[in-house]
Image 1: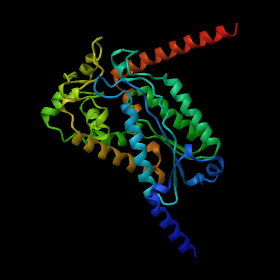
Image 2 (image 1 turned 45 degrees about the vertical axis):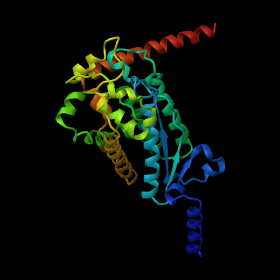
Image 3 (image 1 turned 90 degrees about the vertical axis):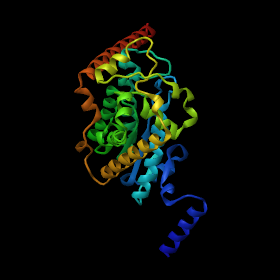
Image 4 (image 1 turned 120 degrees about the horizontal axis):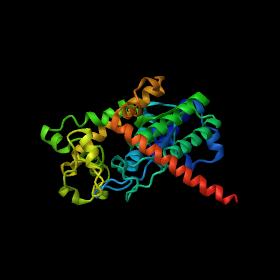
Length: 330
């Protein structure tokens, strides 16, 4: 009788146009209290997608990182559901908050297209979500938040560490793990020497990100990318210097070399690496065994200067806001 019931269920799912993997992916915005209570906490993975609003120059949209995070969330949800029978993947809506836009590379703390929050605010937001989920018994959380700033990554790592220490579960900032990032980087090894030289140390909104958007959301890419001037450096120090002038356009690299084909190569490698690491963690591998991106960045002198400046601004903004609040008490 059980097999008959299961067959009927699978037939019903198929008739509705869904695979069994898709049936295991649920969106918290569509569930009521009874449905959420019924979820098996030991076999429910929560995915918290982020999406910083950050300038990406004149050719890419401000929500470029949000586009990447949303697509990766969808592919991870389907991939994990397919590989983990009996599990539910509970997807949250995107949190459009992130810290430290790449415009800060050259000391530009205000730049059209970047609408960031302070690193401490980002950490507090995800720690609050961790508390809500932990108090309700959830034990597995993946944060999908594609953005490269050091304090942004550290804040999300800290929220995950808090969840682990207080609730005993796993809350993992996937982009913050170097093996996940490695999937992106390894796809660029096939570039020619001439392409690599022209791209230089791009860091932000260059050939790779433009290619990704040409593959994922071509309608959002300005066709003027084909005429983009080269803005880069042959070394990390030179790349940082290239961002300092007031005339900096908001990107580093050579977007004119971009193509949808390269974007597809990068995306498939990156998404596969993210899924592989995710499944290892769900199968019991300690996330602490994977090196963290934030740890790497904090060891680099140029990034240390960025971290110092960003921390100072964080403290100054907090003092400014607190002073205003104090006046309201009088």
